[in-house]
Length: 188
Image (cartoon, rainbow, N blue to C red; front, side, top):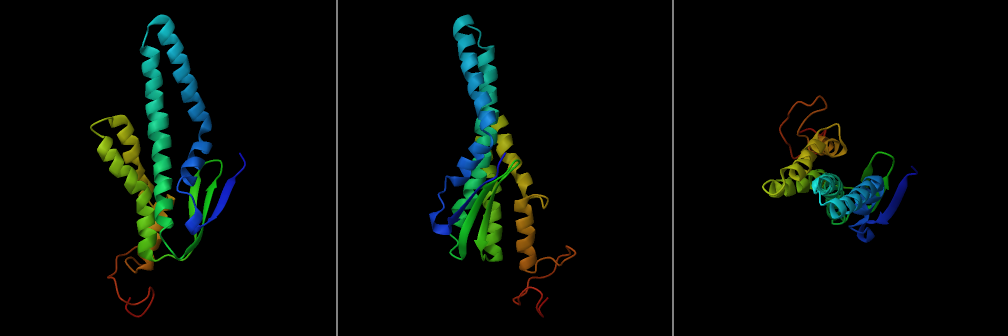
């Protein structure tokens, strides 16, 4: 798969750009879901059996509403916040074989970095909590986005970077008291 990269001036990046790339990234999964729905409709109409329709609905719930929907929301919320940061000159929206990424070009305060990093997983977790009484399976997929805050993922690394920039932890990860001095300055 050839990488798809779009560079947008901050103010001109469309909020749907990330969602479009997520959908483009997983189009085979969406095509499979569409074929399953069509096939199950034919089977249900011709035989009256609803088991295939139930299986197709399960696939649509998990694949389309859960996976594609949650990642589209996740990346879109990063874009929504980045559009508000005036010191970000451009936003690179990219997709490669395994991922979609949103990369700001410019400067951001540690608070802006942390808020933007939390926006993607946080929006999914909030929606997952709302969906929990309605559809626990789809809600679980949204709630799983909290794992994106682990330091092995981009959002988690951004949070660690923001915390280090504010002087909340030292290079070894040990907590230190916040100081009004710049990171690495005398108040540390």
